[in-house]
Length: 77
Image 1 (tube, rainbow, N blue to C red):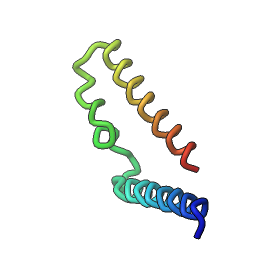
Image 2 (cartoon, one colour; image 1 turned 90 degrees about the vertical axis):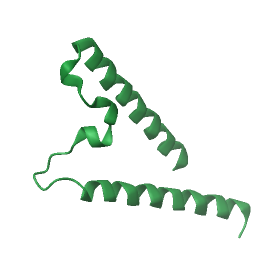
Image 3 (cartoon, one colour; image 1 turned 30 degrees about the vertical axis):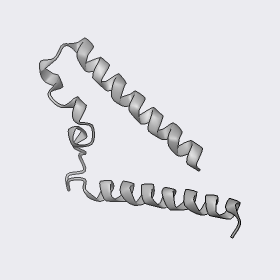
Image 4 (cartoon, rainbow, N blue to C red; image 1 turned 60 degrees about the vertical axis):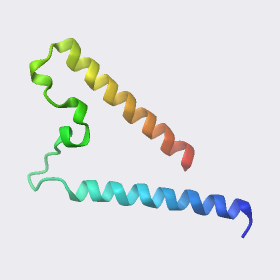
């Protein structure tokens, strides 16, 4: 196997691991179809007691985190 073949194999393994993790997360959803966002994104917990600006900042921060993860996935594939 050449180094190029090994690199593509490693990338494939990483994608498989990510897909397996996503499937596990999907299976862990409650039966009523709702997703507990706070379990996935703990920094969004207890936002009801915070100001609207603080809530918006927390959601933006989480969105930035998701965008960074998505960009990372794009470079792998």
